[in-house]
Image (cartoon, rainbow, N blue to C red; front, top):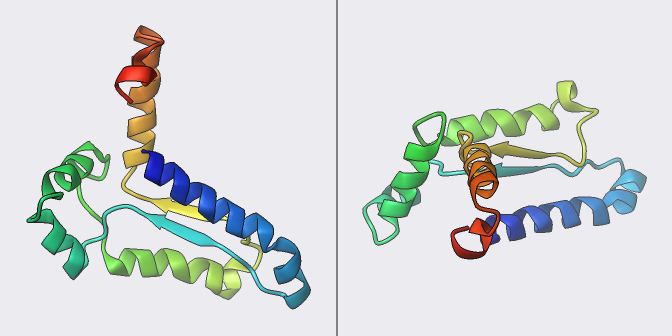
Length: 121
């Protein structure tokens, strides 16, 4: 969870810090925060030492599966095309709802035990 927060913070920092620079040049800065995308590397990771953690993430996702490179490309095409000309400074989270499910479970756990974050999360 900390690495995810770190990645999202880095994305937001890059987006906000580049605002003035990009505005002068007419550029737009957007990011895609993708979950497990079934590339050759991801397929290899599923059978490696981190495979169990990856499978848990997939099982926890609302989609019940990992994404495809084509799906990431489709999301990336929108802000790059004419239809996305007004999109800038955005982060597209595409992880099959793993983070929303995790945050929902976390919130419910904290309602039951306010100290849970110290020990479990």
